[in-house]
Amino acid sequence: MKRIRVLLIDDHALVRAGIRALVSDVDGVEVVGEAGNGDEALPLIEELQPDILLLDLSMPGLSGFEVLAHTAKRFPSIRVIVLTVHESGHYAVEALRAGAAGFLPKSAASVELHEAIRNVAEGKSYVSGDIARKTVLQQAKVTEQIQLLERLTPRQREILTLIAEGHTMKDIACTLSISVKTVESHRAQLMERLGIYEVASLVRFAIRMGLVNVE
Image (cartoon, one colour):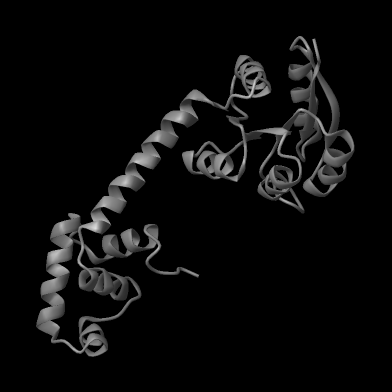
């Protein structure tokens, strides 16, 4: 059988040593190289063209996401498993969208790492059980929020955006050439439709939905 060739990319030498030991325990798998940061990784990826990358996300220089994007574009046949301290479903979603085939937290058991390598080598995807559950819940929450936003009329959405940007009722009325009473009526209606009854919560919702730029 063809051996599965793995390249490790992590900025901590002790972590790489531990991962190398775990990977070496898997029959038919060999570690062909390792890099301590993204800048070191790119030439190694091109030179070695491994079957699988085990990739950290947080590294000095080029980030794991940048290495992932480069690999997905230049070497689409190389399968990438993200191995990271970040356990949020958000990171898993972003990594998978960027081209990763697998996502594991560093807290995962060694058997999960073995399983991830096997699955990804066979062309499948693999996401750690806990992360998968968080990802599903997060996506469900986002979908629910999008559905809430779609309940608003264009005018209500416009007023929500202006509220989130910090404008007063009087400012909004002047901007939209309507009365303050009409603005207050729209605000009450959009709060009712969203089930959100505090201005601070409205602002947070608008930010999550990308209606305002927080930078």
